Length: 261
Image (cartoon, rainbow, N blue to C red):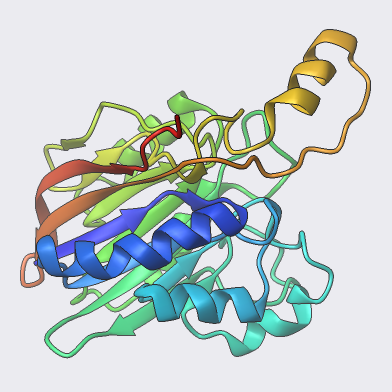
C-alpha cells in the first residue's frame, strides 16, 4: 500500500498545481491515500473551511496544519467540524480541533498525527510527550503517519528515532525545502526531514522575493505576499504494510512546472 504525503501548500499557486496534478499522481503512483499539509494555503498563512474543502476535492484524504493554523480569524470556529483536518497535538487542550484523526478507506484504515516543534519556534507543549499521549489513544492495529511541523533538523531526526517502530512514517514540514535524506529506519518507520512545499518556486520559500530581500538588507518590517510564477508540488510516497504497520520504502516526489520564457 502507498500513501503520498505532500509538503506545505502555499496560497493560490499551490492549490492550483495540487488540483491539476494530484488526480494524475493518485492514478500513476497507485496511491491508497493522500495527506496534505495545508497550513499555508490561505494567501500563505492559515487555512479556511472552504479551502480545506477545495483541497479534499483535489484528492486529499487528510489535511495537517502547523504554526499558522490560526492565521485566518474565523478558522478556530470552523476547525471542530472538520473531521479530517488536524492541528498540532501539542497545542494547549483548550484549543479547538484535534491532534490526530483516524481515516477509514475502502480497503484499510490509518491514523494521521500532527505535532509541532519547539526549537526556533513559538513556545508550545512538549512534542515528545504529546506524541506518546496520542499513540496511547490511537488503536494499535492501524498504521500511524506523522507530520512533524518543525524548524530544526535535529529535533525532527531525534523525534523520528524516538518513534521508530511505533509509527509507519514521520516526515517533516515547515521549512519548505525538500531534503534528500529519505530512509526507512531500523524499526520500520519511514523518515524524511522535510517534504518541501507545493507552491511558487521562483521565490523565498513561496513568498515574493522583493519584500523578503528588502527585509534581509534593511531589517525593516515588510508584508510578504505569495509569489507568482511557476509552481512545484513536493512530497514523498511511503510504501507500507497495513498488517505489520511498518514501512518498506520512502521516495521523494517532485512535479515542477517549467519556467516561463
